[in-house]
Each structure stands twice: as structure tokens, then as C-alpha cells.
Length: 259
Image (cartoon, rainbow, N blue to C red; front, side, top):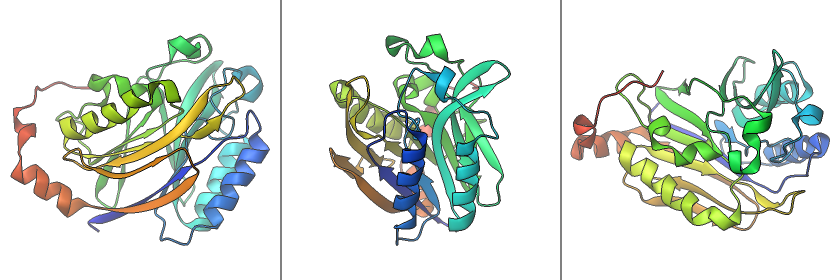
């Protein structure tokens, strides 16, 4: 139980076309031959990073949720990624953590990208999701959250082994993406997974991929620029525990609580 497989799907997205995106990801997932446990999709994987939630958001019984339940059940995987969700007259950029039995967790993006107008359309989340799988703890965050280390920081009450970001991070700021992913891994002594999309969206923004998997010492275990890629990695809990025992930096950290 000390190992856990993550499969990252770095892909272009069809702009504001849910049917095309869901069909595309279904084809990609069904074509994977590596052993799968957790399959990671990008931020707003069914639409692209659109500020048109009035047209594109769904409720929690919508077509995309039904699709996630079906794929997770058929492939016996955990399937995760974010999408626009309408709930009680509010709209969220919500990550879904869909389990093969149909149960799910969710995380609403805390830090909304005001530079792109996201704060005008969406409501910020208030609580992190730390999912548990096979004795592992995975903290799930979204894109712009990466810039805010306090929200990402491990605390005594909320420790984790993997910090995961799904993103739509454009090429102009990709240097920050890579540097911050490494920083989050080093400061928290954990694995960090950052999944970004590729291609150009309907507003002309270009996304270069550069999805990364970072080890707890800041070493880059995987990175892929510019092209579509499907990559599966097996992470080892014993390696993580050995590093934390050999370099017990966490005992010196400041204590605080994130609710």
C-alpha cells in the first residue's frame, strides 16, 4: 500500500464545447494501458478557462458529473479535474474528486484570478479538500492557488503527502509556475503534481503545458512542454517517509491552522 499511481493528461481543450471535450478525454482515458489509480484532468477541463458561466455552468447533477461517475466506475479509477458549478445561486470553479463507487469530494477554488475577471463571475471557496487513498493524503488545489503559500502550507491539523494543482496557466507566466511548484514541494516536503493544459483558447491565450511532478526535495521527476502527453508515475510513500525522517525540517515550522 506504499505506492500510488497518478496519470496526468496534458491536453488541448475545445473552447466552450463540453461534448467535444468529454468525448476527447474519454477516448484518451480508454486508450491508457498503464495501471491507473488516479487520473488528473486540467482546470475547467470540459470548457476551457472561460468567463461565461451563465451559459456553461452545470449543477451537481449535470452531464459532466454523470460522465465523471460513469468513467470512474467503468475504469475503476479516481477521476479529478475542475469545472464550473452552479449551486444556490452562486457559481464555483469546483474540483471534483470522483471515486469509482460514485462517491465524491469537492474543492472550490479559493483564490480567484482577478486579473482575468474570475472574481467577478465566481464565488471563492472557504475550505480545502484533503483526500485519502490507500493511506495517502492528497491536498487538491486549483491554478492561481499556487501563488499563495499560506493556503498551500501543510499545518499540524492538515498534513498531506501530495499537493496537487490542476491549472490553465498561460505561457507568459510559465516561469512562475515551475518555480512555485518546486517551492511548494521543498517547503512542505511532499510530492507536488501540477497539471497544465496546452493549446490556444478562445481569447487568444496560449498554454504551454509544462505539467510537472516534483519530488519532496524539489527534484523534477517529470516535465513536458508544449505537446499533448499522457504520463503515469508511481509515487512511493516509503521514499517520502525516509526523506522526512532524514531531514526533519517540519518540526521547526510555524504552527497555524487552516480551517
